[in-house]
Amino acid sequence: MIQGIVIEGLVFGIMALGVFITFRVLDFADLTVDGSFPLGSAVMAMLLTAGVNPFFAMVAAFAAGGVAGAVTAVIHSKLKIPGLLAGILTMTMLHSVNLRIMGNRANVSLLRVDTLFRSISDYASSFMPGEYGILLFLALFTLIVLVATNLFFHTDFGITVGALGSNQQMITSQGMNPEVIKLLGVSLSNGLVGVSGALAAMYQGFADVNAGTGTVVAGLASVMIGEFLLRSNKIELLTLRVILGSILYRAIMFSGRQYGYLINLTANDLKLITGVLIIGCLVISKYGNGRLFSRKGKKA
Amino acid sequence: MIRKIISGLVLSLVACALLTAGGAGDTTDDGTTRIGISKIVAHPALDAVEKGVQDELAARGITAVYDLQNANGDVNTATQIATKFKRDKVDVIVAIATPMAVSAANSVRDIPVVFSVVTDPVSAGLVPNLSKGEGNVTGLSDKTDIYAHLELFKRIAGIKTLGHIFTSSEANSAAALAELEDACKKLSIELVVQSINNSSEVKQATEAIIRRVDGIYLTTDNTVYSALPALVEVALSQKKPVFSSDPTSAIEGGCVIASGFDYYKAGRATGVMVADILGGKNPDSMPTKFLTDPSEQNLLLDLDAAKICGITLPADLVKSANQVIENGKLTTR
Image (tube, rainbow over the protein chains, first blue to last red):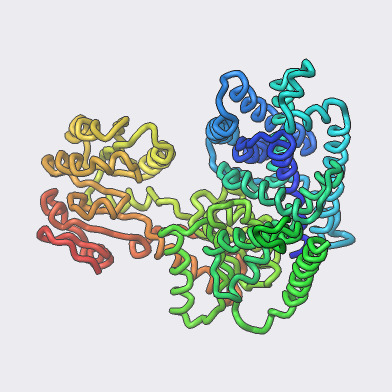
């Protein structure tokens, strides 16, 4: 169970990292994620079925997600459509695109295809439980993604992306084009989401056109839970806590499923349990700021 | 500071809970039969399958502890549920609908997985072919058996030329057409096809072919069913029988035979497979089950329409029907 939680936490953590870049760094509420996640799954599933190397397929999933993000950014900046609506539009259009990619099937099974995860699991099972092999691979993979993201945000351009989210006026007055920066930021974010979708397809053994439902909510919840775990403004900790938040989010879901019956809750109540537990986390995180300890009327 | 203490506490609590859970999982094998049922979403049809499985096992005197899981429409939790079943060491996993079945087959190798209402288990990669299971996986398909329908229709109404009306833009109708053509070839029936685009064309399409055919067969086509009364009127005026695959829309009368999928009965049939596995049968040797026998389906017969068409329905068929229209009255049994 623990390995299940950490594996899912890492798989969806990369998606949460993408959500973190748009919502927190760029301050851009991007709902493309609900479409680019299954897009990554679809690209991975079809390429794997065609016998393409899984790592190359991962790069393709990154590129596909990036293009989806770029479409949102262009709709937003060139057509002057609000960011929220631009994301919803791209997400809606992606549903048809994803069906098209999967050959007009709603669900593409990878049971008869050699996914990367299955080879790792088979290889590892000679000396340890196969799941640990997947876990180690994902931990390493996530580490590489984290280091790359951190390095990116240390470059001049990365710092500019961060500055854009805080103060767009400043970027414009520095003679830089905020539209280009936003486009690259949103693309990068959705590229990561695409990679996460690709990993999820290999982990679950299928790509499903409806897999995007609720992705952005899960990502945001992970980001916020991460903020409750660690407080910092260093980019290394900011990105790390997103992954930790994602793992804790999956732990909350798992434990809801595992122990919900103790208080007579059925599987139908799970969304409620998850929501309440997350609200609990967020409230506790406010406790820590001392806000709930200070009475109204007094200075905080 | 307080924040750190609280967050530390919460984290360690979660960790403790999960660690003890990991330990407890190994001691659940205490002789009781445990069955995990997962479905993709709460939906009347899928709920009926879930209930059917439990009723069938209860009817066979098997008392089991059920773990009813539901992905709440979020396919990303499918593997989570499969992992839970694996950890709890249930005796049999019943996976309802394709995503649940594929993720269970993907992550569980040592517990029997019985899939239910998966339309095409071969292309989903669950089984290599329909005549056997694979390893720990077998199950039931909800595909309508067009061949069995046509065989029955031919036997009762002596069909030589068959009329078929379908909507070209409905994916399931287009897919069913290929199968229908195949079945007709096998039964040496000549097929006359009319395709329509919307429900207002149904009447016209029926009039165009009704004189040339001995009867009309309808697959599950939503657009055609919305204009069923018009179709039936034209057919009966020429004393030609209609065979429908949807008993629900046929209760208004007019279709001589309506035979279709019943999700509760599919659940019962899945329960039979589960019972067989609990009794020691190996999933590897169990073929994919289809509901072909009329008694496993919903069968509606309209004796009035049969009389108009000059068809006498065999007594055993009338006996096995669960809905019969006679003298304008619908009796359900």
